[in-house]
Image (cartoon, rainbow, N blue to C red; front, top):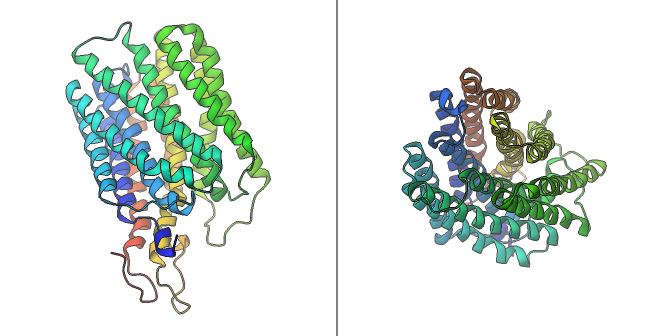
Length: 432
């Protein structure tokens, strides 16, 4: 692969990242506008719409956009963006907005076909990524995690479409909450969590920085987590007795990943001179690790407790900890490296000795990373408390804090990514 082919696509990742930030900002704006609705029982249309803006809009769109950057740069596979890739983005964008909008107005048939569009877009990306990843010279465990993640998102999407159809034309046997919990866990743990762990084996060494973890032990997190997810699905649908051991298996999968993180921390590498301190991207990752531990404890506890009003309120707080505390902040931490990687690649095309390269130190708005970290640190527990207590003031305050964070994030990302569209230093040709 030549140097030109090694460059990641410029426009397509930016489109995904734009969709991600717009979705997150819209989700928190909706919380601020209707805190009483958000703080109530979570299985109602507006809350479902907000959850999908976070899971499908923020988390999934960020993952898809990042794949087009880390594919060439970290996973050693060419991933040029062609017409089919932009068509996939259009399907994801239309499907995400359509699903959230139809949930907000309680039109479940519209949510079903919108979900089908989004799922089709993700599967197109899977067909583009997986064959290249199989041939890439990276750890087999990374390939296993990615393959399982795309398989899980297919299962989660089909389950979600079935649930939306069921709301209009009931056909699923048994109580619907079991199907809802199964769908949420396959989507959050099986798709986003599995992909974060797999990509994390390549990205965490860049974030810390540290040595790349070796050996076949990296497979353990994929095997344990997948076994736990499938067990949870069976438990939610067939019988509660399967839930505790399955929750322990899923927790063990994350524990296996954290053991690898511990190895990386023991094998640190020299910090690059361009990295600003404090490193707020790393702080977001460390905070997400704290939340994955908290989420695992809550998840195992909830799998043991009988269903009650109190356990359902705890489940809502568990969802906030998992989706925003863990996945949301892990994505934010990884984007702190992915966005500058993309900008640096294109800003420095044609750089010469007389025009030194642009570095990440020159990117971003001073003070914004600190403010974003503080707002996330305050907003997530405040929102979780509002959900558990069903207290509208706390939920509204948490939503307002997170809305402010998401707006700052959008400006910060835009300031970093604008460097990718500037004329390269040294008089080189601008990228078409």
